[in-house]
Length: 206
Image 1: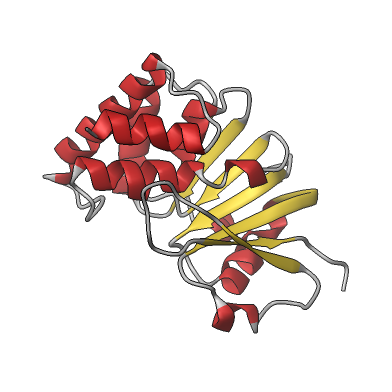
Image 2: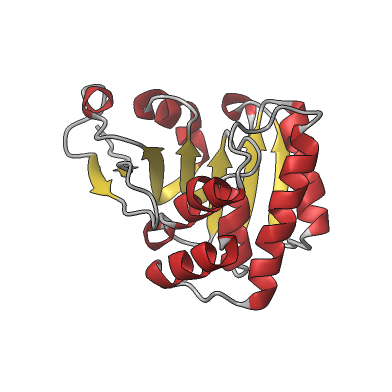
């Protein structure tokens, strides 16, 4: 049943449900549950919920990724970065978090899943430096959009995009953003009735 949920969800998102990728998602789930017994990584432990709330929720933003250098700020247990890296091997991903135990898990998953396009970094985003800017920076359950953008803006490439994944329409967070610098995109996550939105911020010179 969980595999069927994943396969139909991927189809709705326009992604191929290749057996190898399905197997790696299953591998990621088993490892997450195993680690979660010792290290508190997630409250989502049911496999169907994992597929919907972690995997499909992560992959639902793929049409809005810009360029080929992606930074996942506050990645936690690797979402959305790990699922996106699995399905977009031609893009480079840096998964960053300030919590060491979470980055240890992500690094282990990078090894076990054979993800040669992922680097896991233990650092605070405001202290992290990267010579080549990122074409997309994405956050999920990290901070309010305005604060997250301010903390990570130094890492954004010229004409890059900042994406903040949100639930219900983030009306209050928009009050702190510069008018004309952002758009709010409704996002449909397969098998999920709850609302999802994406705040896309384009840096301005003002």
